[in-house]
Image (tube, rainbow, N blue to C red; front, side):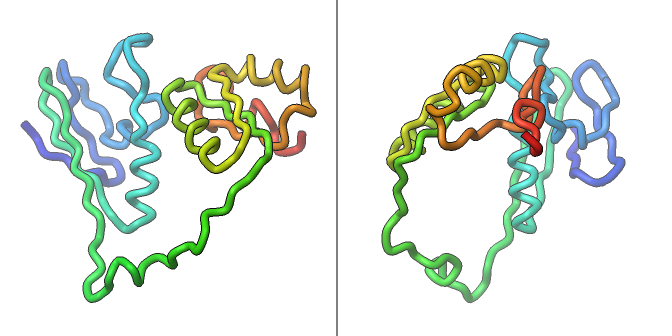
Length: 164
């Protein structure tokens, strides 16, 4: 077993002795599973959030067994949790119509539930091609489109370019 920490250029051993950079864990669509046998991990999201908060991620990997990730976040000495975030008087609500596009059905469904709980009329699509067809046929049906940036076969930027 070998303990690894993500640093620039560091390498690690993955099952079957494949020598890969540790940073590959944090690349979009990286998975140790064969294609079609499970989704890629959401590690790029986790990594971005943890680093933005001044934290770190360590990995312990054992060939043929698996990997374990530890997330370390900074503590704030002499600060109460109440002092870190201003409480909201009331959570804002909306009534706009949103098209949410994410290739992972679970993420799309969760997003739909969350947005609907704030009053938004939310439709979901798990295929960027189906989303584009729906929007092209009924553009007046939506006030806003939210896309996952990292989808297989078409990114969010390719689906709706900034100049569109």
